Length: 244
Image (cartoon, rainbow, N blue to C red):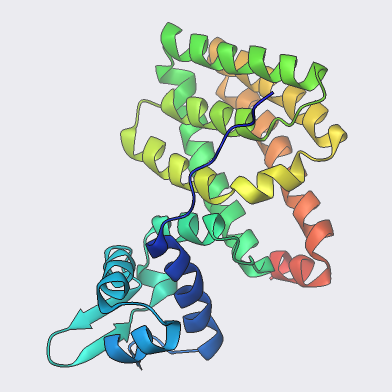
């Protein structure tokens, strides 16, 4: 059997995988000037053209700002960077701190609570058909002992789509792209997969019935399970960050 051949990371992506940790490790403050194009190109041993391509990506994500005749400056990443930066960092395998996980889980909770409320009002037959299709694949994969990581993302994205709000859908898509590696880790434990599948099914039924209170209860339990898992996995620092 021939395996699927994944595309190799682009030169620009490989360079981003070196630049972002460099910026983080050097501890530049928001508004601080970072090395020039020439200095960065020399440091990483790449052409100025390739470096400019990587910098254009960082600028589009509002990580850096290039000022003519002045230099390259770091933006206030915590406040200004787009969600796409989280996706890039996840794709590059960069480590996530307990504080990052806390913020991501809180963001997910706010996003999905509103999405589920709206879905209980606005869901269509087509929305429910999509959710049912995801659940059918999830059950088959679980029975075969396969990961539910991607089906988990598909389920929650379909749930957010049932809200009828396109901005919620876009934000949800970025969140799930950024959480790919963590989902794989979570669903490597069969007990998590079985519990998640049961809660997804119950959540689908509550949304189909338009029972917002029931849906909120199920979603709260579902998100609480994920939160407790990561608090255990990440250790005392994670527990402290949630308590804070």
